[in-house]
Length: 467
Image (cartoon, rainbow, N blue to C red):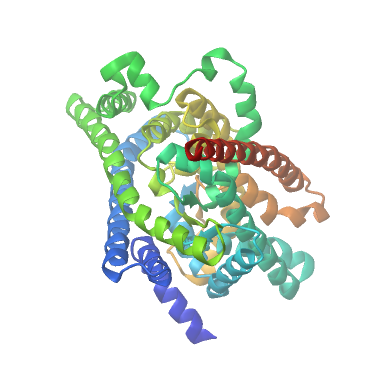
């Protein structure tokens, strides 16, 4: 058992740029792609992951430092250090039972496919750490209530539920994602998309406001304001504004403008690599499934970066930063200082999907969403710190708390990790669970209706062409 854990941890520690392309290479070979084609697509996918990671790191170094400077100017001391998602992943993999989550995810996916309960093959196995994260929080919460054996069983039960919901989310989002990205047969199985259930009722209200319901994606904005909606111009303007707010010198302000402009220009270029890598693999998998399952179509579920070419996402991410800092200052009981998670992708990608890329609504939803992330980051800090100290996964100074200001799917993760707190009289997690479940039900109904109408339209067009 220890040997299995060592092997799995070694493979996963290779990181997403190596591990995910390896999974895709194997998937390509299974569906009878030529080795040279599968290898080429897999390596291109690895290049795309590395490129996206480099750009995000570049943005954190440039804009994140400016945000930190803004916060320091307030003189407010927030006691919880923001370690970002990478720190959370390292701590999660150090959990003693982490290795068992990998076969659990694979087994659940296979069973769901065989029972025809999903059409998604989740290749995003590296992000299994998200299930590990939820599990160790469940253990921390429930051990005092039920003892170690029952708490561990509950942890894996919650993890299995999360795996099932990720597959379901991949199914229901696929049509909208394909329409937004232009990449066929690919979907997102990252738990960050769960936050769309929280956004959905707010977005329904925003749709009733005329100005918020006008076309406002990147293409529409370019048609209205011309060059001022181009990525390089938007990035430069935002960078200059950040430099001014952070009281940078003229030279540093101009450099920040150019850096932000560079990032927004390069993101769509990197996104094209995802399309180049994923299209042949997804087509091969679809063809294979059509042969084996009489017309059944299989989707490939991966992490969010293949959507990173959307200018709307990066515009909203940058605009959300000052509002994140403002919320950190004024939100009662917030103790976390946003830094490593300041480029909060988990805040924006769900808004992008819910609004279909409407930039104005994305920004408004992100402002509404920030408090959830800060609240959950503060609540999780003691348990994250305890696990980090116990496993020695990271070095934490005595008396210091560590957490993450951008925990993926904060409402879902908090609700189902803390669910059994209702036995101690804490009803907030239970209320969050009900809120999320209701939002997810109605949001998924809209997505399924949209997909069904598209299929009917495609069938009608095919019938007309045949006639």
